[in-house]
Image (tube, rainbow over all chains, first blue to last red; front, side):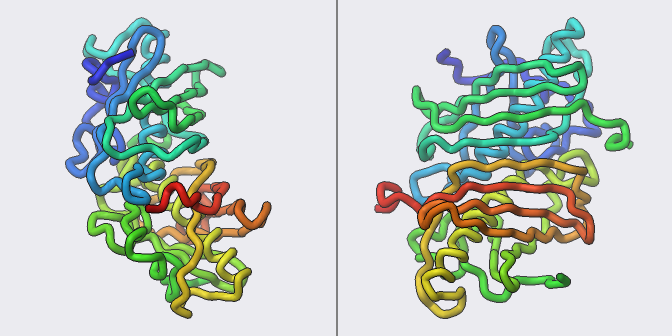
Length: 160
Length: 160
């Protein structure tokens, strides 16, 4: 899987009023602009860490990695439910929104800072309002981190 | 526990060469400057989310919360081993450094954006090179998030 960018990202179609997430909101000027799309039946995010996203010099900050896994997870769940409903990013239909119920990250080895990161997700439906996203984070061909997000459909109480 | 700031933080005494962590490095100009100290036998971090650290409007971004729990965790493990070795932050002795082996975050309820966050940690020694930090994150008196960090003493291979 040699993709270097995501063409149709689910976050591009989130409603403007809910596009200010620091991780993946297209309208958060200071944010990370994480973008997640399908490649076959896997979800993919490509991310280029900024210079300041360092841990020990030479390695990527773990909290940033957790952040990417988090938004990749909720985005992947949104992709999956959207597809189940007959839609794909790019078709202009507003997708469902998920929030993170829990996040687990295993740092298998230090993640080098000089390469773009590729996250590959496998989505598992628990029930229509609850999905689990299993993610592997690669720097080049090396899987450095594994993550798991339990994503829940956003409760109406969080929307205005 | 009404503390509003941490006076003696372990991160203030990390060696300059390893003080560029985006989360807690005192020398990372763009970083979060997370600071963690003792209050009795609990570890405490106080953090004021920036305006851009939003999720859905009104609530704090989960990836930021994961980041604070991460650095609070490694800082708490460093505090604990440092104390076991007879030292306290403020005495000018360079503390041990830890890295995150795994991070788990349970988002119990949305975290409101308008209040400073207080993280309270309980540190458990597994063996001298491996500690578990259990953290509760409070907004006001409400515990919104629980986290667990498994912290490992930094391997020499990560140091130059």
